[in-house]
Image 1 (spheres, rainbow, N blue to C red):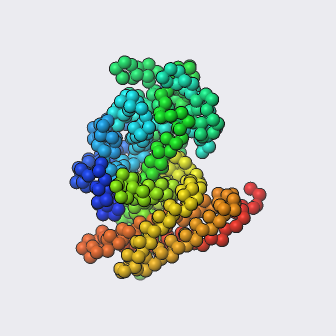
Image 2: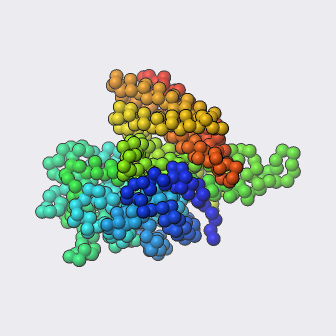
Image 3: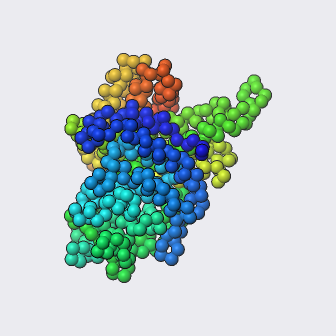
Length: 583
């Protein structure tokens, strides 16, 4: 049995108790599911992740994926592990049952994904990208596209990618130059895409690329982009991969982390023989892609949380075993977990991880409630608002957790013989891809807050106020009052930002968007931890776990929530440019 690296108890607390499954079970499409349905597949995934995948993480990192000729070769033992993974059937957990999926709630999928990601981020990205690209075809593709691609993608027989970025079009997706020329019932695709995760590999028989391209004559910018299904191999009459579709991997990036995942430059149509099939209507590509991007951004938040949780578990175990130094008044060396500074770091890591997990699982919960007969409207508002917060908070703070874990290890943490240095290298990309966290700040301020005229914040603030009103009647009243003050302070910032927008001082908003994003991350973390503490309060005497949930919440409110309150006070006073000196 490998070293325990997962906090299964807290994962299942989020599924069963807070936010819990009760409301989700009221959704028609999920009424036949129960948490018992999750138990069996969770145990399978736990065994696979803990005992098969996690022990390979370092090996995969050392071997990496490499371009040989014009094809990418993955680490030697990865294909066998991928086949074992497919036997469990986890690629189809939330997929449409019409095409071989299980159709489980997103709340269940979050629990399973945390295990897979925590064991090996590089490996887990294949299924995430495949699942989300297939969901995109399911949502907007023709029946013909669905019939050809979905079942094989959901089964993992074929994998998928998301092709947005180009050398000159990173965050500015509208600058894309990839072209699509009508050719009968299809299109000829030409162009180059870069930074394509798992853009080429030897794990599946075909790779289905979702490609943004501009049809000849389409408007400039993002409004002129269309979305196409572009397989690596064309299909024969029986629907099997046949000749090349003129999609060539020209290089693989040499990265700091996630080295087993091939990050590719893909050339489409170098020989004029690349065929693509449009998804939905022309010029609607970015609109469609945003569905996948929102899901992917929440998925990246989950990645940050999952790796941070594993780093926390490794550091905790190391601190329990490593002896160094005596406590005051003693002469014998003690385990470093007994030293106050180490205990503080471990507690801070734990509080961040539990806040992040609560944020991720609530995002999944609200996504499930998009289909609820009474809760759908509110759930949609909260899901949209929390997406950039989840992506940014869980990845920025996740990196902070790995940094603290390395401090707990000391010099050994800096060495490749121990797992923390790889976790730190792997997690860093999460604050960069699927929209940098700076982009998330702009999304929060201009789309989610100003774009709704503040309605989204009012919805979240009302949820927080309802919680504080309840909790003020309990022994946690002091925490409720602290959260209430932070909510009121944030509301004043919203008023200030509204004034700046009315005066068209958008550059000032741009300067401070990321600061607001970070503060709202701390605020939401406090809110969700207080919800958990409220749930735990009646049972704190019966089980140590519940008392621990309350202790963790109290620590967070003492050391992390005040960071939000400080930032809110600063943001209420902003005026003029933030950076005046020459740079």
